[in-house]
Image (cartoon, rainbow, N blue to C red; front, side, top):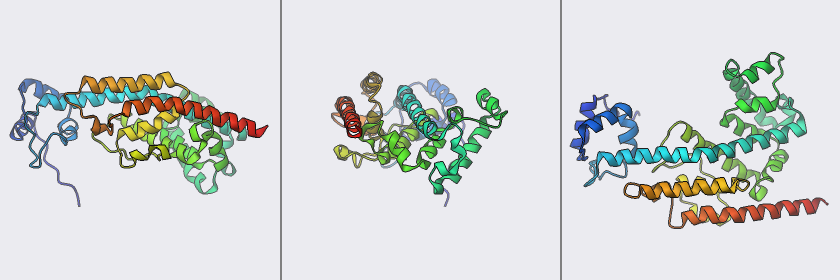
Length: 309
């Protein structure tokens, strides 16, 4: 059964609807200009859920500016997260490519015997479609395709995050474990889960999707020390796993967390941190434990080196 939908409305009709729902609009012309640049669905429908009562009317003293502030906060939050998400993605991309090429060669990614047999067919299709879709726009891919051979280190640069995730998912368990050992815990199941969650968050940021008061579709697997987050499905849960992927660029992680904290404080009159999954002590948790992660990771790596000797 299709969800109910309403016919499109003019800007004036949208304003009248908001007024009938008891939203306070002090500057009608400002509201009209805003709704001519940001769709009603993106602005009002997306951010009203915490601001309305059980009769679908806006709560007392809620203003149009409140909706705009939430929208702008979300936009700034996405921009704040993008640099650290980029670092995580590029590092993962590099480590997957290096590990695979060192073992199977730069062209070994077209050979099924280098992957899990039951997963290679789907991966091959995704890689082919991915490269076909960009070959006319990518000088690197165009250069190599003229020789019919595209090395993985070039192909991976145009893989979507979804294709990259499928590549890791399709790798042999021992190869996944080798990559996972470069991260905290060295567990491929945790890394795969975190990988998918971070990718989902990255896609949300790239496509301007809402983060405020929104559950994450890809919920990361929790470490035993994070069991208090079991019922948390919002942004903070993804941040809690991201800190385990940032041990080599702690300063960037600290800057990101501090920027999020400042952003929340600057919008304290409009933003409820619980709608991001943040609780009392969230800031300290994200900062303090990354130091512990770095120390433990070094211990794991030293112990592994000792065991090999």
